[in-house]
Every structure is written in C-alpha cells, then in structure tokens.
Length: 472
Figure: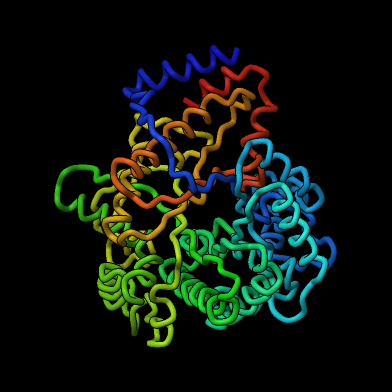
C-alpha cells in the first residue's frame, strides 16, 4: 500500500508539471558541519505547571476555547519534561551531534523577572548534562514564543521595558548553563511573534492590532536581542561561546519579469527578513523601503508620526553587529506581485505593497502554506550572502508536515534529500558560508494553532490513498 501511495504521489506531481527529481550534486559537506535536530519548549515539554513553573502566554492562549484546533493544548505534549533521556537517545540513535532546544522563560523565572525557580534550572541542567554525556552538543534558544504571562500582563513585547526583562533572563541562563552551552540563539522568528501574535492574532497572545503593534513588538525584540548579546560579551565572554539570532524567510519569486513585480519581490523580502537583519548588519537602521513606505502611509492616514518606531542612538549602537551568526528557518517559496493597497488600509501587508500566491505546480504538504520547492533554499542562501556579506549561516529549521503517517516516510525523505542537496550546492558551487543544519523537528509535537490535527487525520482513515487523493 505504501508503494502505491508513493506511485500515486509521483504521478500526481508529474501530471502537474512538477519535476520530481532534481539533479543531485555528489560532494561532501565540510568536516566541521553541524548536523542536528530542533524542537521548542512549549511544543514538546509538557509539565506546563510542574515544579514551580509559571504560566506562559501559550498556556493562557490554549486554555481559552476556540484558539486551537479542538481546544488541544501543550499541557503534556511529548512529555519531554519527564522523558528527556528518551529524547537524547533518539538523537544519538540518528547519529546527530547537535540538538537545538529552547528554554521556557517561565520555567526559569515564573514571574518573568525576580525569583529563580531552581527546579526549572535543574531540569535544563539535567538535559544539558545528558546530551553532553552522549556526545551531543546543545544549541539553546532563549525565546521560542512562550513569554511569561506575568510579563504579558505588564504589556509584554509592547512594553519597552521588555528589553531589560529579557536581558535579566538571558543573564540567568548564561550564568547557569553557559559553562557547557556554547551556541546560543536569542530569539526564534521575531517576525512571527510580531505578526502572528500582534497583527493577526493567530498566535499567543492573540492580539489583533493591524499595522501598529507588530512594529512596536518587532522593535522591542531587536532591542531585547541586542541587550542579551551585549550582556554575554560584557559579563560572560570567558565562556567562549557564540550568540546569534534565528530569522525565518521564504524565497520570493517575482510573478512576472516586470520591473514592478521584481521590485515587489525584493520589497517583500526587505519587510520580512530585512526588518530584523538590516538593523543588525546594516548600521542599526531599518530597510529604507520600510522607513519610506510606512512613513508615507502613516502620514496619509493621519498619524502624527510613522507607525514604524525609530531607534535611539543608544539602541542603534547596541544593535549594530550584535550577532556572531545568522540562524535561518527555511521551508518554502512564494510568488510575489506588485499590489496597490489603498492608503486607508492600516496593516502590515498593505505596507509591503506586495501580493503573495503559490505556484499550483508546487506540491502541497499537510500545511497549506508549505509547498515543496527545494531550489528556493539555494537561491535564498545566495541572496543573503550577496546582501549581507559572508556571515556564518546555520539552517536552524527545515522540514515538512504530512498526514500520511507512513513509517517509511518517503515524502519527507524526498524533501530532506533535495533541500539538503540544494544547501550543498550553495556551499560548494556558490561559496555560501553555511555552517550547519537542524532538521525540524526531532519528533511529532504540538503545532501551535493546529494542535495535533495532522496526526489526528491519520486516525480517521485506514486507507492512506484516501488521504493522498484528498491532499492532491
């Protein structure tokens, strides 16, 4: 039956005009290339209120009916809080030498600041020690979307003091774990935190404030990142680690060869990736296209000043060059066209002046936004190098969702094989400085607003061809 599924998948792709097998480059990755898998605390840990942990915004969000598929929660998730040793053995069995995981801020500091929860510190110490005992290097993300609810009650990422709160939290983590952790990521996907959490309301804390809150949240995340980076080198430089940030981006293909669409594709990328990396690598300033467009639209809408905040001289100085590497979470591509939005529309999307769509020939995974386009990751790696220089890049997430549930997992094998080979091409043929790759994810987990929906779909049908036909 699984062979039949794969044949049907291949036939479906071919009938849509999609090339199933791209040419592979047979070559070697650098000897010191980091291979690993990745997870995040809320998606796998469970133990949501165990041993003194405080509630996070995701704990609050999932316990409010209607926010998540079938009101599912991460209260237990993969139960990694109790089964972390099993997690480590899974990583070891796969032969991976690195594991990217995140720390739950509210497990360390239940109120976000102030008193340390020793039981939370002990949990991460035990996990780190177990990894090292099995020859696996920890790569730690400080923030993967689970802000302590106590801080959200004070305004969260919209409160400028959040940069100081994050600095205090980072200091505790460096102090407690930095003797063994040498690879730190401050923030995971600040773009998603800003837009999904505060523009569209589809992620915790579920705030809908189009065209305004997202820019404030993005601004304060950059300030928080910079303070964490600086405190590491000011107070913990002797630990000899690295500190960076992880950003997400899709490759942008212009819909036509018109100049307007080509410029729109670049503008969309500037609003997505440039929003966060330009201030760090291009002099402490936002992309000029963001400054110009948001400023002009804000004035036309009657705002007294631009909806895009300005950095103080102090913040700008802190943010410049505040990263040792660039983490990139990469999954898919977009088709971009120029689109004229009326000035009366106050929103992030309207500010971009770009429309998005998908090529119908791109195979759709269980996540409708995630189409399989391996060539896009190589193009994006070269774009980053061309725009931002020879900064070390780590692919900190890459993978796909499915709801076939096959143990031989041929779809995912195809995805990984071709995306990883495109990274190899970027390194060998294009000279891009990619240093490592972390597959997403180590295990099936709580997928935010989708809960456990994809895997639940498998339980509804005994014949996987039914699922396949309805996917295609």
